Image (cartoon, rainbow, N blue to C red):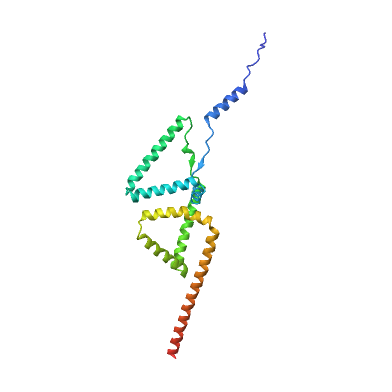
Length: 231
């Protein structure tokens, strides 16, 4: 009998493992990094405090342009909105084509999302604002907070007087301008504003105490007169 001297066929493990790794990597590509787009609180704070000057200037210019178009040139809101939408779509189309011509990949919008944590934080903030508003209404109407009541009535009266001279669009524009300039000025001159506010508060409290004291004296005098008449 002849014995076979042929060795069994060897298997190249390295090549097979490399090919398996290659197929695995192609079948399961690495996911692109995602980004939570709901964290807009920091951006709004930076725009209001002028930490991002480009966005702050752009917001102010956009508000001014919209106010001029609707108030001065008397354009219709639907017409202006259509024009702005057409410009936005054309800009996005031009931007995407420029990226393709330069060999760059456009921004993958599918990687953006709103996380559950951010949604819960937004809901908690809205709930907090609603609760504060309800407590303010209760303190003005039900509780005997005369200072809050007087301040609320005076503020509403001032708003009614101002609104009689300006329309809603102009008031909204003024609100945007004040919202972009007021916090910045307050942060810059916070110490001086607090000192002035403290002085005004002390004087107001003195005047309020004087008025309350005089009213109490008048009440006591009237009660004494009634007692004398009863006697």
